[in-house]
Length: 173
Image (cartoon, rainbow, N blue to C red; front, side):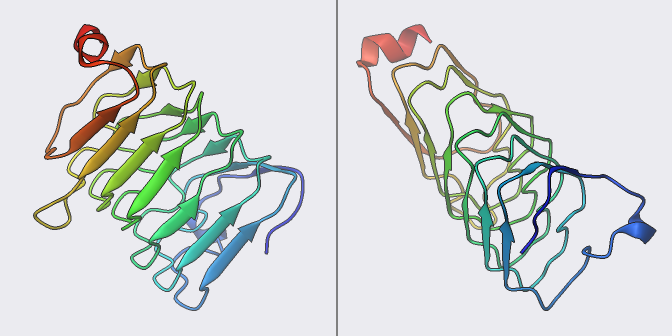
């Protein structure tokens, strides 16, 4: 369990005691933490669950290569998911909070199968889920709210897109 106020600072690798840990199974980031910076939990090979407080507004390249992390609830106040935040992490299903900006490759090579964008989301970014197929299937479902105004998809996708609005409205995006 991590608690405090402000950011979990990005430091040189030698000063990151959490990196490459095989024993931690669950992480709880308590209320008060604002940012989870690069490499905080990189290569936590035994990590199965992460609980992140709603005070967190930014997640850096923090959960990459967590090979057992299949479930994560993103905080409702999340504003930014940085590039490769969940790179090569097999989160199967995720819900993206409204207003979150997702950088390219945030979930690349992750194995994400289902993504739900909450109502209020306006942009589905280019290449955020690039090469999500760690197996032959990859991204299978994407749920888009009617609030989406910009919808980019490049990469290896074989997904079914569900849209709150009409087909005519989806074609205009």
